[in-house]
Image (tube, rainbow, N blue to C red; front, side):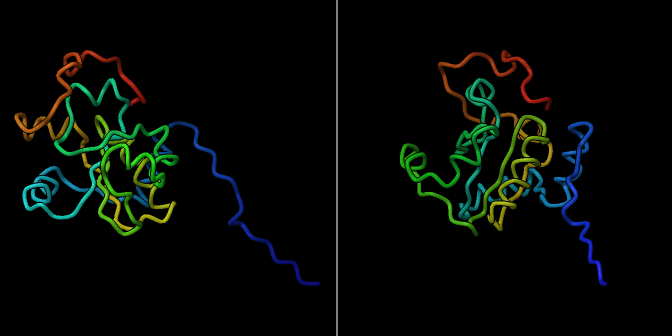
Length: 158
């Protein structure tokens, strides 16, 4: 009698969020703020997604970025109606998609999620919006009706 067992079906349990992020880094690829700035300045084809909550996004965001909070990313990334409401085309699976959050961890998780969903050219912004803001302090946009940049409470642990 031959018995074949598969250990690939074992469920992984993460005892803290940092372990979850560490595992996502095995899938996700980062991009530096200087590399993103080059992409933005050369008008390469790209899509920048801000996965922070709206109260974090509105006071300051990278020019041209689209806000899709991390909690609903999977549901909106492939929804034509969402993209129509933004006057944009729905991204295809091989489009360059760059994700960012405040400091990086949600961006890493979001990038790994999109990779698992079949998007093949996904990157997260290393250091998140904070690194962008420190490196390019005059190059961000804001919703003028929003409050000050740091007025919102900490969201998502990063």
